[in-house]
Length: 136
Image (cartoon, rainbow, N blue to C red):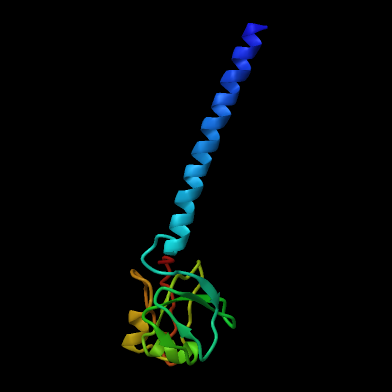
């Protein structure tokens, strides 16, 4: 019988310690949440809308192309096309897709592409590629 009492006393002690630990963790989480997540910015993601004030590092989705952009600096949005051309939005990633630009890209548009991107300009006036007979 004494062994059972010792087991229950020890179990009660462990439960009390766990409650104190959970309470301590809860207080720390609440402090982090009140600071705004602890990050240097307020990164969020949402559908792009014209006429909205976007803060730096907000992620927006062009609903026509499902392409994600990062806001470079706080500004009031116009259109995805104009905002990219004005250097307000930077393409986040290609997600294994080819991004086409229906005109010769400006340097500003090229600068908005992710690092290590390849830019290829195709013209229907160019001679078509014909591999040599070796297949290379």
